[in-house]
Image (cartoon, rainbow, N blue to C red; front, side, top):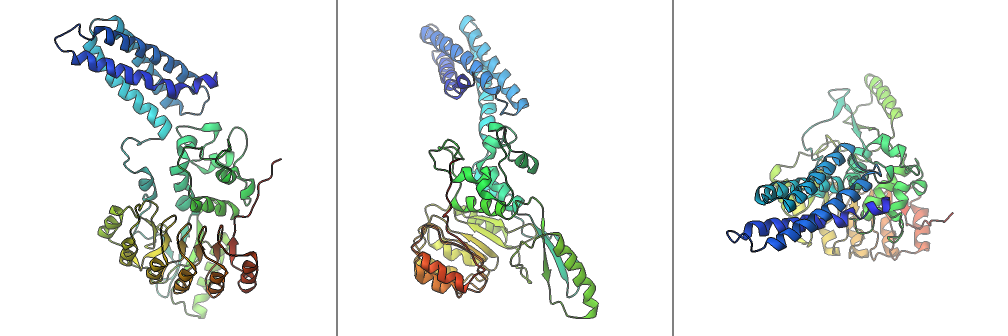
Length: 459
């Protein structure tokens, strides 16, 4: 019966088109009342039959329990009313009044159905992905506790789940695993639901991405039935997949993590009390913000935000209470190298720069090397060469560098071994050799290197 229910999306489009055609002809024939009567009658007959079949298959599909019960009830009864009006028009001579009601019902039913499959606000969102990613643009608000007013020590918090994981799930996963629809009984819109898992199994194993279906299903071959999102849906980027993997590997925490900022703290007996308080705070949570600037840059103005928005360059805050910015070029297509030069407008605020899957060249990297506050740089699947790595040496605070799918060689490893603050490197599908990696590790043993060389084993 569930198999029959899966035909609902196919059948449901027939009554929409056929009934609207019948309504159009009904009004179009004007004073010649009998001109299209046979065609109109046939349209409402076929439309009513297909509407009835759509109601039946929709009811079967709803029995899976994967949809919001309140919304599915509304959709169901409006759909039944649509079929009933269709049959009434077929048998009743007062067709024009009823036809107007029918059009209204078709619109309402279609809107409710779209909400079930695509999520709320789908109709009025011109760029859903951009809206989701810009939710947390906060450029002035402070979120800090000052323990000492002068020569102060400040405590700030950062939440990886809220700031990085949840926005990915909202855009890529909520349509099928959110509050309105739970395919396989799985919801991913809150901590409790993620930990609970679906009908068949749990999806999150803390500290172990390779046993967490929340990650492994993302990297299965596209042809695999368990690959997520399903074939035909918008797929996650390599960076988004890596972000989820690292979050799970680091404990999959849903809590705020504590970090501290020390402003010109003087070594004195008077400061010892405050140092003890900070040590207690550090014991509560893992340090997560790798670099927190002593002198926070000023917030970027609305005109600058609007300038980049018009270029389809997404600017988001690095975290609540921070004026540092993440610049994402994911939607900046076609790419224009002049947009890189425009980043000088936010060079003091720019901390994370994402240039994935763009025709970035070495000359572009030379410009980027002037933005001294960059801590993370995504250059995967770009056209850069070893020359770019010599320019990036001028970024003193660079910590994470994604070079996946580029043409860099072991020559770049020699340059990277001189970078002081590097902590994570991504080398999947590059021209670096195993020998080159081994030599690099000897020089920089504390740098984490991701090569994507894991394998899945069938049980």
